[in-house]
Image (cartoon, rainbow, N blue to C red; front, side, top):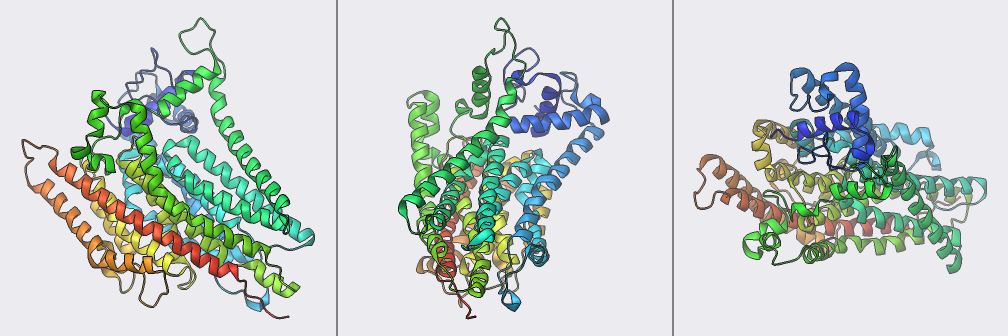
Length: 583
């Protein structure tokens, strides 16, 4: 009955009419089987804010029970406008932050580092292509504005956290009051990044897919900062490192508590039918947010478990009880970790490079000013973070417990951000890793839409999907790489110096793997459209599409992991040996 539009509208109705402690609990006025709230509390607070506006402009939209199924023109207009407002307030500022705060990867003129105003002005032009690339994100446009959700809120918060984390790499060490300010401001940036990501987690639980990348990014920069403050002393460095990690943990705990604890306001008496303790309310919310009873995957999602279900039968065995839930959870966790660990290990080399740059002491004020700018460092770090986040997200999508088609937005969003940054930066700023990110994103965009074809067909979004994919292909069109959307363009140009692994991946990508997977996607979509379902195998085409799409995402994970190692190596080469100018 109905769809995600009714789910989001129903949450406005619930939050407007019921006290917070009843939002996640089954009751007379809250039938959890009817689109019950199953996202974290920040989504509920967002719904409550919109419900207060709806009570003024469209009261019938949020009437308890009576408003169920409301889909009139005025109702749709209000809900659609609310998604656009969410884009403008959360997603677009994250894009502007990426373009305006990341310093330009060019040598400053006059031998001095650009100031804050100079960085904003020079970065303003970079915001335009980055925003265009991300706005031509067909999967996000179709899910948020067609299928109807607010993914731009959680993804905008998560991307903002990645950008702030990259910006907090900051300049190199210096002394005096200016040096103290330089050490405090990056720390505030890292704490702000932790707060933003905690908010993203409290808005949608699927943001957890990016948490390994954010975690290792924080550890790398905390280690770099401790190398500065330690001044060669291991004990001081470890103490500073532990203090920053504790501060980051406290920030996450405080932000999470600020979002979750208000659910316990105005608890009922113990005699009531609802949970009367704060712990019971929180457990009820967690049970809704992490619904393990819903199974290993939903529909024909392009995960490894769905693709291999005809062979492994893990889902069927779980439903039959021949294998326990805890065993499947451990299996999924182990498979997910095995997939994302190779990309995360690139942080080890990055930590060493950042520490070496932090320990470098320019011999003069002029040299110190030149090195302090380190213009390429935040750009390179942002690209590395985006690639590792994409690898982490793809790993969870492929092997985690309980995923669905829409979750592909999580790994694709940081890749889109990285591609936008690479497109905005000067050609030589990010090297082969930047071009690999840009061209891989160009190929994955239409494939992500194809992977959601059953869902989009069910919603009547086939034509908008074609239009959005075509627009994305035009926006990202690169001179000399017209067939990039088919995967027929190499990931790196022949003149670029890159690792052997990325070179081989580039040759295999354009020579065989990507074109073959693209053609297979197209053939299956055409076959599902033109041919009648096989009576004995009614899900044949969706199952085959799931398997082919999973193979494409597994290949993309390998490419992204290789590119992440390349980005870490390039960043280390850029900052490990600072170029000093003579006085």
